[in-house]
Length: 169
Image (cartoon, rainbow, N blue to C red; front, side, top):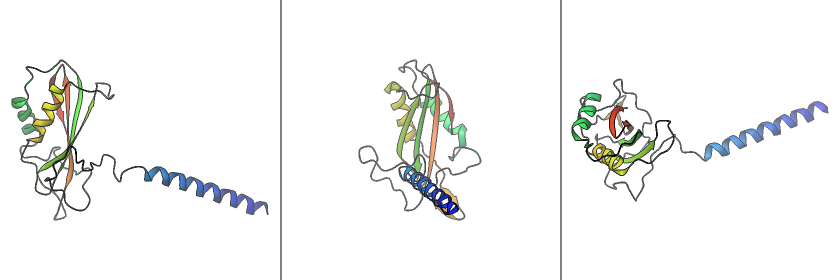
């Protein structure tokens, strides 16, 4: 009898733990960082294919764009206007989707200070970086085993005293 009670208690304990873990998981999206369409800010003409968007498409050279990281560095070196930016420091990450046609859309921005704490940059910096990112062309199409995929891409800008010091994929 004592053995049955112990087994029953262990069974109830196990079921309770499993149920509580399931409830926690149900509160999260399928993948961390999924970008859902937002009618207020996303272009409804940007086409995202049906099916899964590759969360972290593994490209051997970092950014999947013609000219690789050098192209991105040169693009911002020539287009970013630092003449009117404030002297702020931290990180700005622009995350977006590259679709099966190599077009980009559904942009999200995250800003943080040098200690990786949330922060809001002056709009002269963050809006300019976002707008410049939106106009980058030449993104490569994600392909795996002969099938084209949409994928997430990000650019993280290390800002020091208002200047772009480094761009990281």
